Length: 356
Image 1 (spheres, rainbow, N blue to C red):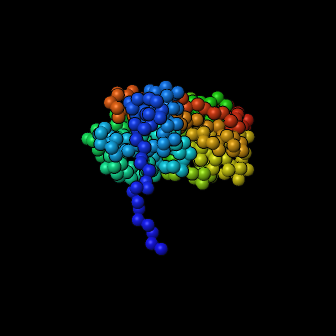
Image 2: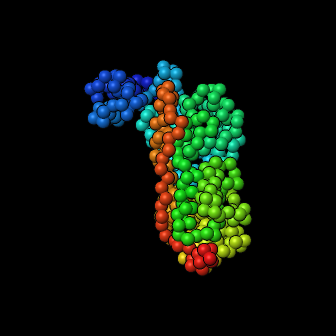
Image 3: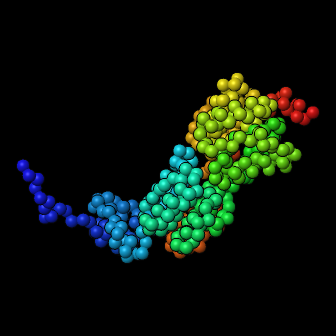
């Protein structure tokens, strides 16, 4: 039996925004605002309009909307990796907030490669995105020039500085590790080691390393080069290997500061394999406060990165910029130190010898 040809007469006419407005008993302009700028509409009206949208199975005609407004209502984002839960959490919050504001997110990852980041930005701009969300503030000069030439609104995230003129939304990574290191100094530690993912372009981790070095210098201590293990990929295996290297060269280390939680989890595992328990023999701290940090044995002392807040703020600020508003050059969130069981007082033998 041959398939019957598609019969247009049997199709159901697609609902229009005027139908949504009629069912919700609001004006056409109000229905449009609910879909495009929901934050300026009262919750009661918003709920009525969204109920009508669902009842009518209404979907916006984005092509017509783009033609009439001159916008695509698409935002592009490039993150270094989705293997880090911090970026995954931030992207989820970014996407949810953009969706509520009437925008669609196109996402890509650069694997900490600046050339890949540039190529992906070019592709996103070719797709006509209205704005861009990037991570950090260290880019190839061609990327900065391209965005400026196109006049595309852009915000940078997770950092505290804006060296390229893009409004930044994030935390002060340097200040956070400075405070964490001071806490470890207050516990009596004087012999430090660092496992840092700074072998690739990563201005956030470079700032974290700088904060550790600065805190020690202000206390009169020097962090020798051999006490810093720099790796590329912040994964558990590299944290484990990093601790083995540190203790092989400097077995007297009593505190290890890692620039991500994944590295710290690996370091805790390596310490246990060597018969050195945290925090009895070795204090180990991380950075990010991913979900697993509070569930490790022992739970990790770390710095909490408010990724969801950063993602939502990036969406809000970028949409404001797309609409022509001027943004503050820096939006800073608090990076709290979460003191848990992986850090404690320096071992008595080391503390006493250091203060002698």
